[in-house]
Length: 401
Image (cartoon, rainbow, N blue to C red):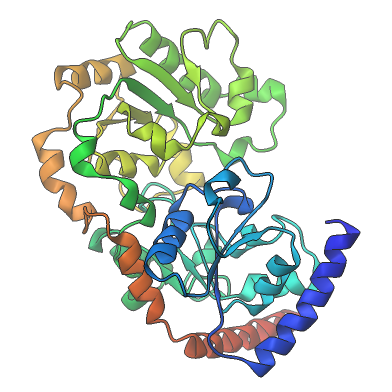
């Protein structure tokens, strides 16, 4: 943060608190996405909905001016530049944050800078989610009794709502079933007629590899297993383009020979949701992207080569031996791919029949339902509860000392 930003932050903090004291009600909402640099997720889709349907509503969108997605906001009202005076003012003035990320992403990610940072951390927020919960346990900051917990956690079905209420300690009313806002972009009738000419391999990162040196990573099961799967699929000489998305460290570890005839997809190649519209088969491990593939009726292969360690160190809310859709790799991944080819890259009848259990809505009205939820939030009651939790946390700290 520059000196100029510090000065803007200081005066915005003072002004915001004065205005909040004089006008405590009818405060604006602030919407954002990953590190305030994206406009391609549920946050932006929800913001667009509000702009279209409720143009006078005080809902603002924060984004950095050097973001590759900034051009998408051209001509839109209530777009706020990250680092501007308006940005710092709205951090204080806003009554509610709305995002598929945690509040830290609307400030300066992983930086702790005084009073404004404390306000951001305790601001009520609605968590729009990236995808359906199931394959990966959430951080404990999302537990319902924590000060950092969202006041509403959006879900897509009773199946997912049950996961949250049973494992994270939320009341059902705090876990509304609306579907994901970004799925409003998906027209399922048109999706079924799309040209699906790509096979996407999307592997998630492993936290136990965060701090290992290059030599250790080069000999890891993670690197060798994924590389083996890529090579087996390449050898099949399929009539589909092979797209691979993975952690930058993984990409850097593959040789030119290993990645020949495949496309390494990065953020600069375009939004993932646009890519998904042309995917015929998704191969993943534990990613929530599998749920989006299911929603889009794209077959899924699960390559869970390190399942036991993953269950121990990360954890899952569902039994990974009884996944509700897709197929798991037992021997060679090419065997699973051959089965999907035999199905003409279509899901099974059983998977399609069960789809309604995991997606309560398959329309394009999630943003509308989310807006209805937000309009019915009693922020005064929420803030009273927040103050109670702050006092409890303070006593907890004092008691430990």
